[in-house]
Length: 362
Image 1 (cartoon, rainbow, N blue to C red):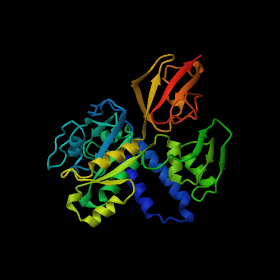
Image 2: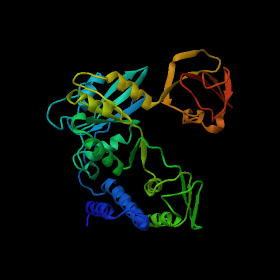
Image 3: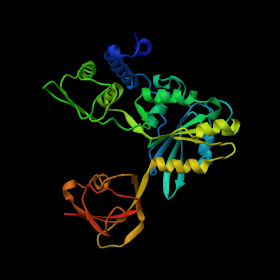
Image 4: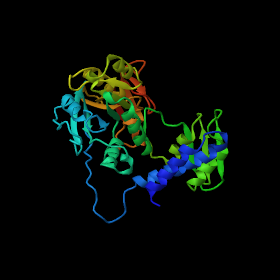
């Protein structure tokens, strides 16, 4: 039996199993097996046959945004409207067959926008060019899921299911679970909150499925078995996603209002160029970029020497990789993150937008 058949069989068994207290251990084991088989499916083939052509492009600019959606939902038209890059658009499906990059210039930042080929149901199993599309999406900072407003919520549900099956978690935080395998000593299990979904027995059974018999596990929140499996696997990607409903000029105003009030959703019309400015503002908020200016010791501030970083970044996170921590003495910071300017700070200081920083080495 192949991996695809095993995955299908486990999925059928999960759907047949009635969820109650008596079956929670059985369901936990099934989910652990399902995660293992899906991980095997995504591993590159070790055969010496011809390799498939990839279409990833070098990451450039200050952030990367991936456009994901089914064929003919308006991704190429959106790229042409938002950037100076022309992406072929037509009324037939699969017009775009490779990754086409563009650059959005907004508030002084260069945002790389990738128009990816349309994916179909079963992309996670390799149908179409699903694996290449998903591999590129994992490298993005934000995902824009382009949806056809005339088709309701069907596309959104299918795409979320495809991305979740390959370890991409949209608009959800990383589980607050401490997990560390050990060489001996058995299982050390603790929790700081009451648990309603996981128990020590279930945790032990899931770990045994991964052939882990010695580990430290600490739950800091009431997590589900699926979240615990994500922590064990360790290759999950947690990223923000903006659900963009295109072609709203073809539906009723009541339906537009319903879609617009959904969480993490924006309604637009590429054909009539409606609401594109608001979409750009929302995208900027989801990227959560901050700009930092650098200053040489004893020199003047050069406003051109600025760099964009993700928000809530500590000083330790912006140091150049070649600078060793033991070389760092302190930093002088001017800006809204300080009580007075300049303020001497350490590595744990959290920077804010448009701060000026001067590094002092030992």
